Amino acid sequence: MEGHPWIFRAAVAKEPKGQPIGEIVEVLDWRGKFVGKGFYNSNSSITLRVLTRNQDEEINSNWMAKRIHQAVDLRRRAFDDTITSGYRLIHGENDFLPGLVVDRYGEFLVMQIHTLGMDRWREVIVEALMNQVSPKGIFERSDVGARQGEGLDTLPVGVLAGEVPPDRVPFLENGMSFVCDVHTGQKTGFFLDQRDNRLTVSAFCQDAQVLNCFSYSGGFSVFAAHGGAQAVESVDASEPALVLAKENLSLNGFDPNDHPCIQENVFDHLKACKDGGRQFDVVIVDPPAFAKSLGALKRASRAYVRLNRMAIEVLKPGGILVSASCSSAVDDETYVGFLRLAGAETKRSIQVIKTHLNSIDHPGFVAFPEGRYLKCFFCVVT
Image (tube, rainbow, N blue to C red; front, side, top):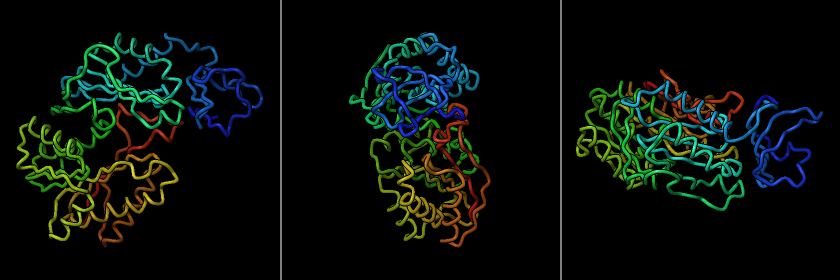
C-alpha cells in the first residue's frame, strides 16, 4: 500500500465481525502487518478510509483537533484576510481528513460531510473549528449525493454553531468584493478553487471583448472587468447565478449594463455567436464536470471537444482561450488531447502558455490522484 486513503470492498479479504459501521478499525495486510487505522463502512464501495498509518496514534478528539489545526494553520500562513477572506479551510482526504470539507467565506464557515465515519465526529469537528477559527457561525451544506453511497439517508443543511449566515455572505478575493449564497448556491456557495485562475485572467483583458461561459456568479467576469475589459458577457443557464453575477459586478463598481449577464444554454449561445459572426478576444469555458466517473468518460470526451471547438470558432486569431475541467476522471494529458482535437477540427493552432492544477488551499495528496481534479489551460489560439 503506497498511502492511498481508500481501500475498496474488493480489496478486503476479511471484515471485522460485530464491528459497527462508521467506527475506527485497524487495517492489516495479508501477512497480518499493520497498514493503518480508518473508518469502516461495509455499506460503501470504499469500505475503509484511512486516517493514519501510525499504529501508535489514538484517534480521538485531540487527534481530530490537531489535524484541523494543521489545515487551518496552512491557510493562515497563505492568506492575508484583508485581501482574501474566501478560501477552502479543509480539503478532505488531501488534508488527511477523509470526507470533510470546510470553506471560509469572511466571518462564516460552511461545512460538508460526505462520509459515515466523519458524520459521527460532527460535534467534535464543530467544537474544534469554533475554538481555532472563531467564526460568527458554522453552516452545514451536506446536501451531497456522495452521502447516499455511504448509506446515509440524511442530507443535512443548517446552522451547527453561532449565527445564521445572511442570504448574501460577503468575502474578499485578491482585493475584489464578492457575495455568495451559502444556503442554496452551488457547492458551498462559490467555486473557490479557481481563485488563482481568475486573477490570471485579468492580465489578458485590457480593452478586450470577453465571453465567460458557465459564468455562475461571475467570478471570472469580475476579474476580467477589473483587468480593463471593454465588455464581459456572462452566460449561464441559472437565473439565480446570474443575479449573483450582477451583484458581484456592481459591488466592484462595474455596471452590469456594460457587462451583460445572459441566461442561456452555453452551447446554444456559442452557436448563435458563430452564426452572427461575433468574435471575442478572450473566451472562458469552465463547465460543470462532464465526466463524474470513468464510465462517463467517452461521452464526456465528445462534449469537451465540442465545447472547446465552439469556443475557438468565436475566438479572434491570436485570442486567449481559458479552458478548464473539474472532472477527476480526466487527467491533464487527456484534456490536452481534447484541445488538440478541437484545434484540428477548427484548423487553428493552440499554444498553451500557462497551466494550473491546484491552489494552496486545495492541496493534492500525492498518493490520492482522485483528489487532483481541477485543470485549467491558458492558450493563445492562432
